[in-house]
Amino acid sequence: MASLMKLALLSIAVIPTFSYPILSPPTILPRIDYSASEPSVPLGLRSESPYLEIGDYKLSELVRIGQGDYGIVFKGKAKKKLGYGSIDIAMKVCQEAAIASCKLEVKVLQELHGKVPGGIPEVYASSDSTVNDRPGFSFIMTLEKGGTLKGKSAIYSEQEKPEDKHSNLVKLWTTLEEIHDAGWAHRDIFSSNMAFSDKREAGQPFGPMVFLDFGQASDASRTTTPVGITLKYAAPEEVALINAQHYDRRVVGIDPKLGDVWSLGCITWQLIRGSECTWAKENENYNLDEEKFTEIIKDKLKVGDETVHDDLAKWFAGVLAGSRTRLTSKQAREQFEKIDAGHLPVVPPYYDSDSDSD
Ligand SMILES: Nc1ncnc2c1ncn2[C@@H]1O[C@H](COP(=O)(O)OP(=O)(O)O)[C@@H](O)[C@H]1O
Ligand SMILES: [Mg+2]
Picture 1: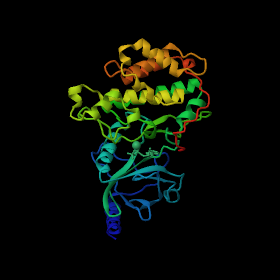
Picture 2: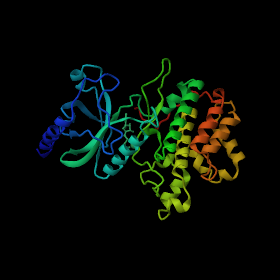
Picture 3: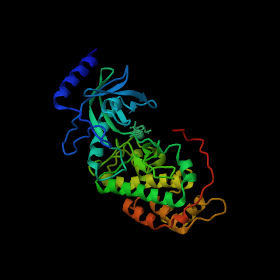
Picture 4: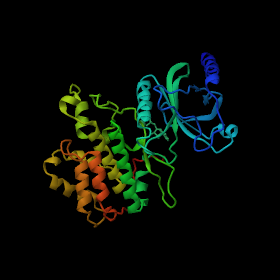
């Protein structure tokens, strides 16, 4: 009841300041005014009969995905009211411990808007909300329809033509470079936090990749490793920092952007080789003997009897190096760009028993 009243109040509060003109695609919902410091569009949410309400509009079913406080909204009733194609938006609903990281996420996405074209979801609206009468925070963003990388990396590694794979990977590293140039590190790059955009070109099985989930992002002021980090993909120095919690990043001299380079290096490995690169951390002293590590990588990248080109093995040795010698995202992008697409191995079908099906 309380939440109903809140909803009613919200609608009343919104109507005088907010009107919905007939918008023409691709502008579907009013986007946040990025020049304003606070997002301006309130929304209401009830979880008993899930729907999303923005001003006057109830935008269809809220479908829960997974266990988390997370919902996807799509094909809204706005279609009928506004008279054109379906809308595709995703909504993240955050409660309790997640509220602060969700607010940070909106701030980061807003700051990156325009600086990272196509590489991150676009935020439409955000607001404090109520779920089951408990305070929460929600935001709406573009739905990346191509599915997440989790479960798709094996298919990707087989299906992409080497030249498409090469240019998609250059794009991916360019996106990381743009995020870093804008002053942020993502800090939780792994397969569930990356999606394929549905904006694929004719004849290509996948669209470009998009980074999701900036809830752990960091600018230079953050000094600790997030406890929610995904260990499999985390750089060794970040894992060490979790284990030694008294260390301050500034004292130890850890750059979270270099942590991103390691994690995206692991993702790139998966996309090229179709298997995870968790073995990299087993070679604790690898950075003391670069040549030997390049040989190990060459061997791990081998497909059948095909030897892998030195350029690619060296590149991986650079992104999976110890933090003092690791390439920056800019260097990684520049050097990957120079690798001949023909040097990427063509991998046979690979089935990962670990992968899920999304
Ligand atoms: N914009 C989006 N488009 C499509 N799917 C998304 C989007 N944002 C998140 N998801 C899906 O929801 C999952 C959880 O979202 P995420 O932002 O990673 O939240 P959490 O902080 O709970 O990990 C993602 O792994 C992905 O499958
Ligand atoms: Mg996530």
